[in-house]
Amino acid sequence: MPPFAALVAFEAAARLKSFTAAANELGVSQPAVTRQIRDFENMIGAPLFERLHRSVELTERGRELAETLSRSLAEIAEAVDRLRINRAALQLKITAYAAFASTWLVPRISRFGAQHPDVSFHTVSQQRGSEFHMNAVDIAMRYGTGNWHDGEVHYLFHDLLFPVCSAQYLERAGGQIRLEDLWRHKIIDCDNHGDWPGWSEFMTHHGTRGERLNVAHHFTYFTDALMAAIAGHGILMGWQSHVKVNLDSGQLVRFIPDEMVSPDGNYLKVKHEKKHHPVVRSLVAWLQQEGQLLTEDPPQGIA
Image (cartoon, rainbow, N blue to C red; front, side, top):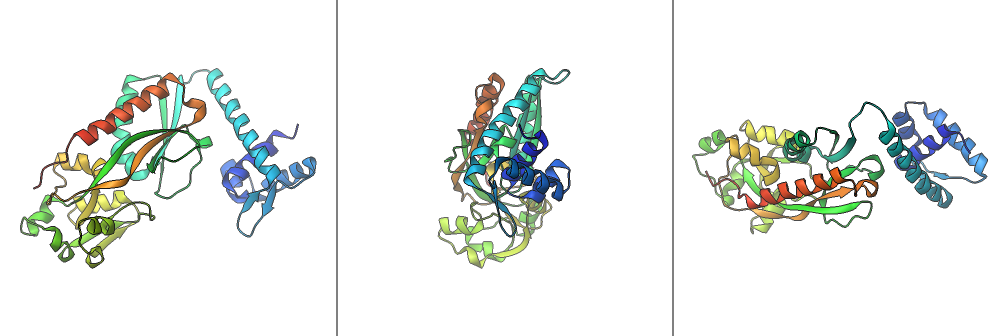
């Protein structure tokens, strides 16, 4: 058997495609990871990685070993979790995009947790477009077509998009804003990484030129854009799942009936090793029901 440290270093480097990133994750130096993997390759008698300029890629032998090792380490981790004393019966690690996590997931997961006190949750928020790996989490909440194969996929809902602003902004605008007059107003936008519809797609959907809009405030994160809209800085393209609480509280208002259904949907991906756990099945059913309630509850009426 090779040293366990070499196995761990190889698994991290294979997953992250970087010796440096693996070293940062493991809390060791990059030369130490490089040395462990080199000794491992010498033991096998063949290279496990192709060294590129800024990254590394697995060789065919490396891919075969990485798949086996990832499964084995996951089984070891689960066995230790089952045997560990003085901890919750189940710990679930969930990843979601930052805006979706803060506006939709967190309030609901807290209510579910109140009914399951023996379960603890570790929520990992990620920016849109960031990569993730199912061997590092138990459940991933993702927006897309649902055509993924690295976990059991469950449909939640398609979102609804419509412009929103603060009541104060609407009042300053004279109490009425028409779709065809949006180009006269301050627009709030955020990064969408190409896969998320925004102002351009919405305006095109309604037969209006989106390139004429005056984007006065652009943010990296939707949560920052949301705070700007609440503060009255302009008009934001709201996602129903993200802004419903703000509409219900009066922090934001709708001013036109125009809306658009998101082209893709929101999904849950469950790690194959956890998909049969009773609590996981209950959580999936709970979140699906919450998603159904959202689509059945129409957005707030027009101000």
